[in-house]
Image 1 (cartoon, one colour):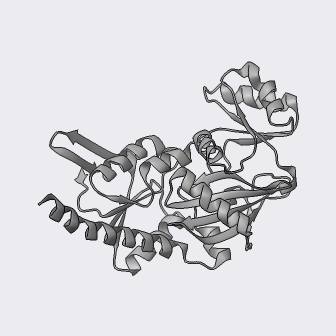
Image 2 (image 1 turned 90 degrees about the vertical axis):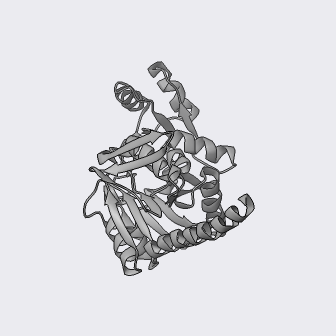
Image 3 (image 1 turned 30 degrees about the horizontal axis):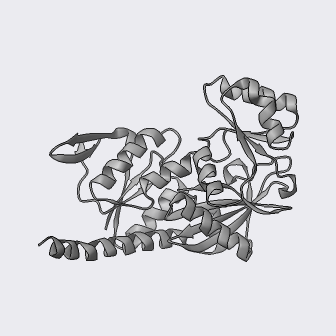
Amino acid sequence: MNIAMLTNRNGHHTQNRLKQTAERRGHELHAINPLRCTMDISENGLRLWHEGRPLTNYDAVIPLLTPSTAEFGMAVLRQLECMGVISLNPSAAVARARDKLLSLQLLAQSGVPVPTTALAHERARAEQMVELVGGAPTVVKLPQGRQGIGVVLAESMQSARSVIEAFRSTRQYVLVQRFIKEAAGNDIRVITIDGEVVATMRRTGQPGEFRSNLHRGGDPKPVAITLAEHALALQATRAVGLSVSGVDILRSKNGPLVIEINSTPGLKGTEQVSGQDVAGKMIDFLESRLKQRRAEVPKLRTMAA
């Protein structure tokens, strides 16, 4: 199997783990910087180049997009899909997961409990948004942020208004979300692959830090999730349409809440504390999808004949 990995990073742990795992199984995996790609779209078909070299004969693609590569990277991912390449996650689902507002809307529509969230376009609605989520302290976040970037805890109405105005001055709308105090800087990451929970971990933020992301210094620990949390992670994954997901859950006094869903969950902390070969399970999934695709092609040809 020839695998393209859409990434602009070198030496990233998740990237290295997936490459080592794939090559150990006899596959080829190449890192492709989507920002260095050129696309050709015409009535004669679709073609793709990377640094002037045509990209052909790829069976699968793993999108590891960052904020700097997301917009053009999504176009490259869609191009590969249109060329018949299997993606670890469908491009449409990746786009939904990357948009915090859209993913929250889909989760709520499907009955998944989420923290109360408010959104308005006008800065003058700042106080109304804070009141809608239960008042300060409140969490203010950008809809496209990742790894805890663009997420701020506003301790008072005045600070919330200042943060909202500062974010809006960059021409970005913001989400205002109820602060779950009882979570005490902890959350749970649940990794799902193809409709199954494959690994879990608890993340604890540094003292005085409400964000538990590992990139913010969060400490990963093993955790046993409840049946309700297990079902919730799978329900959230289905709602967004992902095949592989990292579902982040807070334990509130009213039960578990899904705060975010990720289409490219990092592997370092999860594999370390769970003891699970998550990278291997991702490659397993791609192998299974490719086998299924190849089995379907002869059937389609027979039906067409």
